[in-house]
Length: 154
Image (cartoon, rainbow, N blue to C red):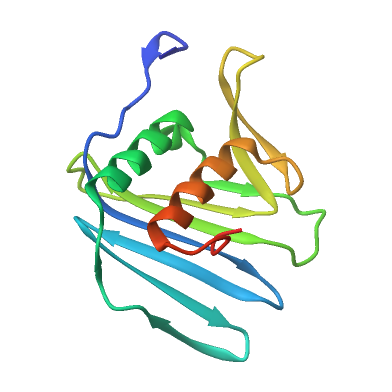
């Protein structure tokens, strides 16, 4: 899809993916995907150590769904940081992705703000606050499928 005269980078291969989301006082949940394997972990604020699950095989159809979702929400165009400074505590999230055999990862951080594609404004990437995160839900839904846990990523 053309954006300002150039084509958005499409993810074709996924070498590494990490996503973490959480906030005080609930702790955080994380998924790490390396090639065709993944593990999930949870941490709470009274237990700093994250205890990852055993490494599990990633279903190729779910890996394709994840890549398709990342392309649909245009994660390669996301800014480095999405931060709503008007909210105390709340929900923080972080995404790190290595794709298309690049040498460096893309890292994105958010705090109570979420990127989305504005289809009413020339498909520009914008951000919304906590209550309104349509594209972000697409990512969370596919990650819940991979983790095989309903609402693991909320």
